Length: 262
Image 1: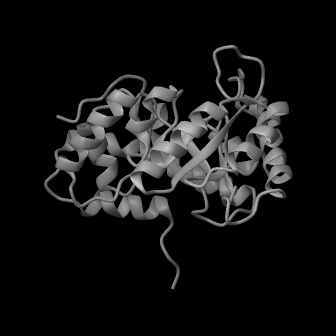
Image 2 (image 1 turned 180 degrees about the vertical axis):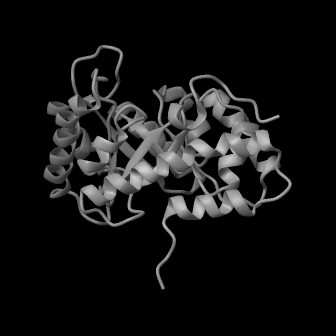
C-alpha cells in the first residue's frame, strides 16, 4: 500500500479538519503549492519522496498565524530573533499543547544569547565561530543535553551575510569536534540572492561538494554531518536538485507581510 505524499496528506488534512474559520484555512493553502513543488523537485533529481524537510521560516509571524499550517502537518519552524522566538515558543505551547513542534534557530546569534537557545531549539543552524560553539557547548553541558548544530558557511562576498569562510571551515570543524555537548549535523548557507533562481545553483553545488569533502573526516559519534540546509522561497527547487535536505521557506507560505491568526 502506497503512502500518501506530504502534499496529498496535507490536502486531506485541509478537507478533514472542522471548526476552523475559512480565514485560517486559507492561510494554510499556499503550503500545499510549496509541498508539491518540493515533490516535483525531488522527482526531477531522483530523490526519495519526502526526503526533504520543509522548514517554515516564521520570523515576524505570530504564534496564532502558525496554527493553520501546524494543524495541517508542517511541524518544522525557523526563527531568527531570540526574544521573539522565545515568546512564540511559549505561546504555541499554550495554543497547541499536544503538537510536536520542531524549532530551528536560523538567524545570527550573539554568544551571550547561547543560554536562551540551548535546549529550546532542536537545531541551531547558524554556528559560524569557535566562541559561539564553545558557549553553546558549555550551556548544553550545564543543561545535561547534547545540542544539535549546523555550521553556517559563507558563500559569495555579501558583507551582510554571516558564516565562516570556506577556507576557515576545516579548522573550525576540527575545533568543534573536540566538544562533547554539541553535535555537528551538517552545513547551512545563505548565499547571495541571484536575479534568477538558476543563478543560485553554483552556490548550492559548491556547498554540496564541500559537505561531502568534509564529511570524510567526521566520525558518526561526532555527528552525522548529513544535513544540507539551503534554499529559500526564491530558489528552493534548485537547492533540492542540488541535494538540499532542508529548505527554509517563508514568503511563499506566509506572504510578504505578517498575517494575523486571529
